[in-house]
Length: 60
Image 1 (cartoon, helix red, strand yellow):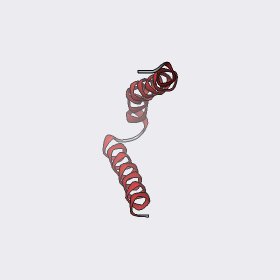
Image 2: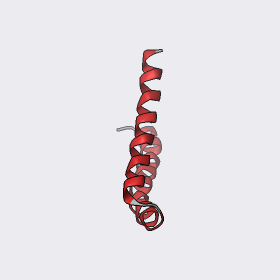
Image 3: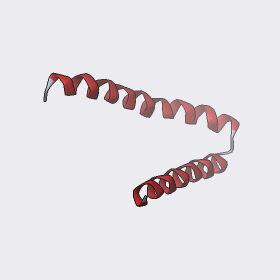
Image 4: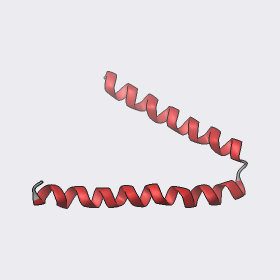
C-alpha cells in the first residue's frame, strides 16, 4: 500500500472506530430517556430512509 493511501485510509479508519464505539455510549444514554421499542423504531426508520436515498441515487 502506498503512503498516500495510508494518509487517507488511517484517519477514515480511526473515524469509523470512534463512531462505531461511541454508538454504545449513545444507546446507553438514549435507553434511559426513550423507551427501547421507540428507539428501535427510530433506528429502523432512519435505516429505511437511508436505504431509500441510496436506491434513488443508484437508479438515477
